[in-house]
Image (cartoon, rainbow, N blue to C red; front, side, top):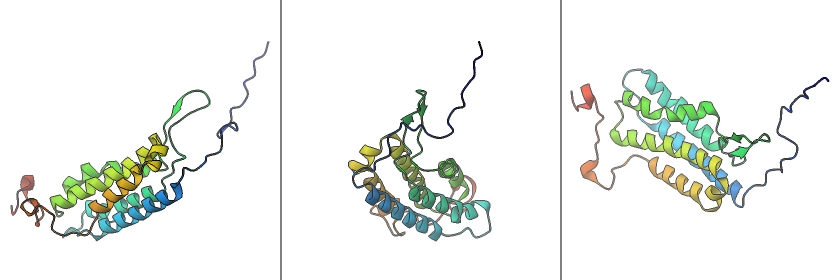
Length: 188
């Protein structure tokens, strides 16, 4: 007896139902893309270092580009699902791995951006976290994320984090000069 293996399909199986958008999905995704553009513009508006540094170029180019690309590419159809063979296929919410990689490295890179204030550091961390969080929410449970306003609330938080620089509500915690010198000591 001869056993012949049939070729496997390269694409998705034909028996999957077509994707049907959630109620309000186009509006939610449009607002997310707009919030991403505003966040990217804020990042690009941050001060540059006094001398050329790789981190300065990264903050002015790759990071805002990644935020904008992630928020514009959000796709609830790219959610977690079961493959025809029963394996779990992890979704990405529409955000490519390279873009996610750029966003997840933000905490590691910020220590090198000593010309920025701690407030700006925290806000950049918030931008990266919110952007990756929205993609993960859409990958994990797009219906809840869209229908219950989770994406909209996260976009509002993103807008708050990227508001134009101005004194905050607690002036005793406001630091207006950047950290510099060894171990972040001011004026060293």
